[in-house]
Length: 360
Image 1 (cartoon, rainbow, N blue to C red):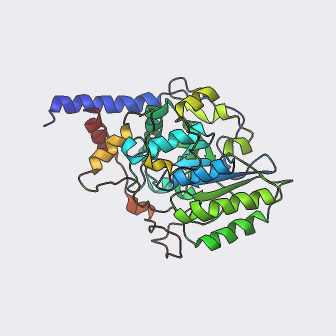
Image 2: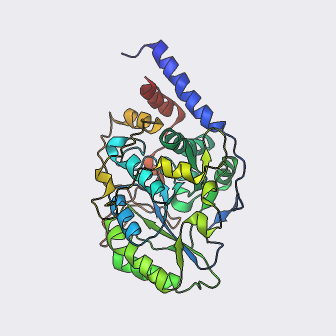
């Protein structure tokens, strides 16, 4: 039984953790745009493959494919999405995948904590969706991303103000494969058709896909790599395609300044010689185990109503700005997308209670 005194102390500690992150200095780092919706690369001839909603069941396979092709990609990570478990819980395999991403030179961005539609929640919930991911990243690495992709690409003026206040580059795309709603064959056609409308001599492309889908990982990814290279594009991260050095992609959780490359590599799991051909990394656990974060706290609050399992099927993302009900299954291994309103909001009290359980 938790005493009132113990609960009060835990709530105070939880609030302090949030306050600590909220108080981190947020200077503008580098020359990548702030306060605008970034939809394209500024460096001609570059193409950034971006993957939303993971890391998930198939992300380890995706990392293998990227390694085999010597490609660096960008992953916009959701802290707690569906039944995948929080990104900081080692039992889910998600921390090991994040560490591997860093070790292998990929870029990690934030895709909110629980995939709420920012246009449908209040200002405090908007802040929580940003801060909770920062708390999780801080517990794992001591730093957090400076790039953010809003769920559903919805970000009204209030959302823009929050993200600008917290020092984020708001990052969307100009090529949508729509892999979340169409067959892999159609997703390939979408990529090839839209790519044909750009010229590597004058254009840079940010492509959207999702690593929560098996067909995206196992069929679409290699197709995109081959097509992009055949068209003359250099495959890079979002940061690189904006001319932004790697040290600027993350913010130190204490100083608010950039994070040097050696620290990024050290934060990642040490890849083994067989990492590019082994079983998905999601089935392994990093040797550098991280402690659980606020993510674990929130998940502990949820356990009484919705048990979780490692890498259970995630809800797919409506990436084109629409909010439909469950899409028709057209051959892609998906779970129907819940509307943003149906996902619910993590109110302040519920979050603090969850944090209290964790701190206890």
